[in-house]
Every structure is written in structure tokens, then in C-alpha cells.
Length: 450
Image (tube, rainbow, N blue to C red; front, side):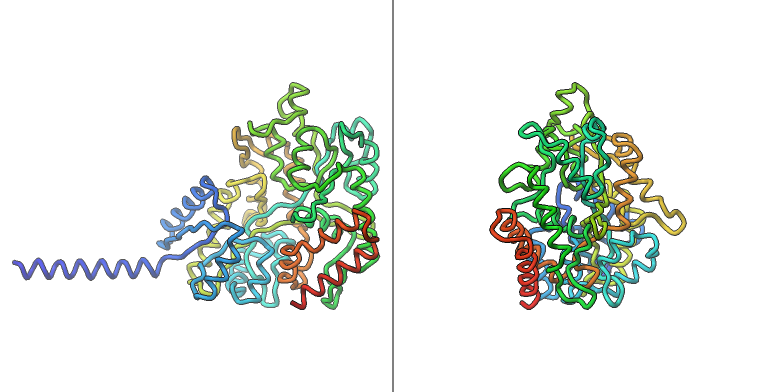
């Protein structure tokens, strides 16, 4: 009897070990920078459903974005990278070039899902010779936010062109009651790079020429600098960054600002910690939201563009490629609307739909809820036209350098803030526009050579 029991225990132990090994083989790790508690819960719910469907366990590991580079560098050296890695566009091309990301696997996922189901801009930003460095999952397009009611009172056109923007800034500028246009001017903030780059792109300023050489010392750059300086004449003094512009707009003290769609939450009045002064003055909840217009694509003398920020799902060098591809595919199919719903106002669907339902994710996004204290559907609160305008910009998101294979250089530009620093010197009248363009060109070239 004792021998029988020992035999049964040995068999049970062997089975347990076998199951553990099998479980280890059917497990992947997903690093995410969406680390807020409620967003982690959503991601883990999606992972649990994926496990039920496939038998593959997904370990969702939160990583703070400011620690992402260090974590990835250490994991790469130890050959212990996660299977799938959520990250912003700033790192995509550089990590593909360094061998962190497996562009072959990402390209296979894109082709399987159908590259025609994605916005052209998000795909192009991740393009590499072999296809795509990573798979776009969500993003936001920078917006020019303006007071429709004040524009209507003055008979001003929609500020989607440089001349219309200046016309409105002059007409509505009445400090200290209201500033005509609040431009980003803080040299230590990424926000300044984002706003200035948007205007530079809108005038046809590219990071490189057709031969791949850094090419910022151009007449178009000089003209952009001069235009930007003119805009700052209608802005408050000091070093302005995202907090100043947002607060002044929801306080009714700015006629125009540049911001991301995340402002939809604050200006809607759905957050108790962010009082909307125009709503209080008018005694009408939602007054500012209903009287706010959004411009996605800004047109300059030599071009037109919308600055876009995209997040990507990268399959790494060390991944279980088959399981990782299944997880990315699931996130962009069955789990996609729940993913976007984590923060619908700032997570636009870069995948428009499926082959069979080409607009299903766009239509689904319009019905998602946003807000913190109170929640409401985007299309219901802002109207279907606004929702269409915001999501339509995904198709043409633009950025310096990524499509030209200069992602690693862009990371250095953003890391050093070389452009905002030179811009600030120009705005302070320390150097001319021509000198500023030349210095930007020289210092970016020096970064490339490091």
C-alpha cells in the first residue's frame, strides 16, 4: 500500500512539473507604460480573455515611461527583453536599428491585419527597409484649439491657415483679459518642440533633404521662426508650457492654443478638480466645450501638416514570436475598443477597422466614454462633427525624421531639447532668424555624429 501511494505521489509530482513547464512555454510578458491602476485593470482583463481563447498567459508588467529606456537597455544586455513592448514613436526606429525590436514579426502582423486598415501616417512613421519596426496601436494628433463663439462675434474664419491664425490673434488679443494666441516658449519642455515642430511641418520644413542630410537651414525654417515669433507677441510673457496654456484656455483667458485631445476631458467640465470658468460665468455647464473648435491640419505658405504622437506595440528580439504575434493581433482586434476606452479622448484608433468592416473601430471610438468625475460619450458631448474631425487626422499624422529613417536622431533632438533652446534665444532677440536656423542645423548635425 505504501509503495502504491509513493508511486501515485511520484506520478502526481511528475504531472505537476510537466504542467509547470507547459505553462512556462505558453506564457509571454507584456511591458506597458499605461501604468494607472484603472488602465492596468483593463489591460489585465483583456489579457485574461486572450488566455481563455488561446491558452497563452500574458504577464502585464507596468513600466514608468521615464524608466523605459533604462529598463530596455538592461534587459537587452541580459537577453531578457519582454515579448511585447508598448512604447512611443520616439524609440521605435532606434530600437529596431539596435536590434531590440524584430521588424519581421511586426511586418507580418501588419500584413495579416491588412495594412490598408491602418492610417497611412502611423504606418509610415514606423517604416524600415524590411517593412515596419512595430505595430501602431493608438495615438493623438495635436490640435489648434480655438473659441468658436469669439470667432463668430468677429466674423473670423476658421484658423487653419497661418494668415487666418494671425488675423484672429490680432483681432481677439485684449490682455490681460484674453490673449490672442498662447505659444509654447519654455526651452526646457518637450511641449515647445511639439508645438514649434507642428508649425515647421506646416511650412514644409523637414529634418532632412531627399539625400538624407540634415537640412534645417532653409528659407522655410527662417520664415517659420519669424511667424512663431509674431505669434508670441499675442502670448503672455515668461516661459510658457502645457500647464499654462491649458489653464488659461479653460479659464477663458486664451483665444487659441495648441494642445492634444486630452484637453477634451478638462474643458468639458466633467472633472471637479478642473473648474471651467466660462461655464461658471455663463451659468451653463458645457458652454466652453460647445463653443470650442478644433483644427487638425494647419496650412502654411509651403505645406500642411498635423503633428502626431503614436504608441506602438513592438515584438522584441527575445520574444516567443508566435505567441507575441497572437497577442498583438488580439489587442488590435477583439480587445481594441477596450484598449482605446482606457482614455478615449487621447487614444485615437490608428487602426480604422477590419477588412470586413473598414470603419468599425472609428465608429466604435466615437461612442466611447471619457471623463473622470463624470463620464460621457465623445460624440454626444462634442457632436459627431468634432469627433469626425479629430479622428480623421490619424490618416496624415506627421513628424520630423521618422519616415526618413532618422528615428535615433529624433530621440537625441528631443532628449537634448536643442531646438527649443535655440528657439528661445531667437525669441529673446539674442540671435536672428537666419542665425537660429543655421545653429539648429549645425547642432542637429553634431548630434547625428555622436
